[in-house]
Length: 416
Image (tube, rainbow, N blue to C red):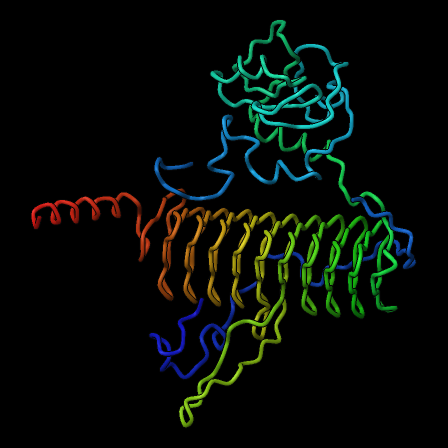
């Protein structure tokens, strides 16, 4: 995402986003994290199983999902989310700490949308206007808002102040992971110095290099490569064909989807003023990914040049996102598909980045700001405003942007 050779920074003698000091790390907790689980021997007994402004395209599911579209998203179609354990509704209510109206003995075996629900499925509604449809659906039970009548209903109802959140938690609790057998597949290569905790799953053709540490309950998908000195925490899910470069650190419960590349070299070069040629600036830093982060398919996160690239706790990154070197992403950030963050950008806590957002080097996005789809932020700019939506290139508050569009429209009309 840095300016290409010949662009505005081509005459700068220092390499973009590598020479300057990277962001500090005092608020992160994963540095030097100790992994001291019980270790298992490598063996070959794994069994393989075949706030949201109208008309603003923020392009991420957390904002756009509603009762009508629930179930259309790919994450609900993936087998590992829809295969579920059989549970009595009384157990589900106890787990979620929610009041239950109706028969607690009824059993649920999966989750579904209102459109596709069948017997055994659990569905949710956030709006009273959809409750009747949910009760008439094929689902066995419904999670509904506090608008739901607590008298006898056609179906059992779990009542929640946040039905969508309760549904998500129920889905995670009910699901049966497809990688439910621990062990190491015979076709995998695991270096003798690697330490694998009890309950780790290593699938077909995985390569685990020297001094790798993998925490309890983590699974590594087929064809993935884990480079030397990588640390992976507990209960992580690494999907097939993921590549993790040396010395990267992943916290607990990290999910990395297929084809992602973590810890690759950043795009940093120094130009020789005499010859005009570019020479590579060292890319020897680290990548630190904190707990509960999810990284989408075919996304890339570069290591730091001299220090670290960091992804904060609870951040969710969509597919086809690029995070450049020395970038500092805070906690609970949402980054939608095809977004790019250039070197040494800082994204503070609770920021939302819509699809195809472009962030240049040394930009700071302050806490709680929202960038609409295809917004562009020039180098070294600061975006601030908690809950404020920004749009356009260069990005500015959406009210200002829409006023500018209206003025242009009037001028164009006069010219015609």
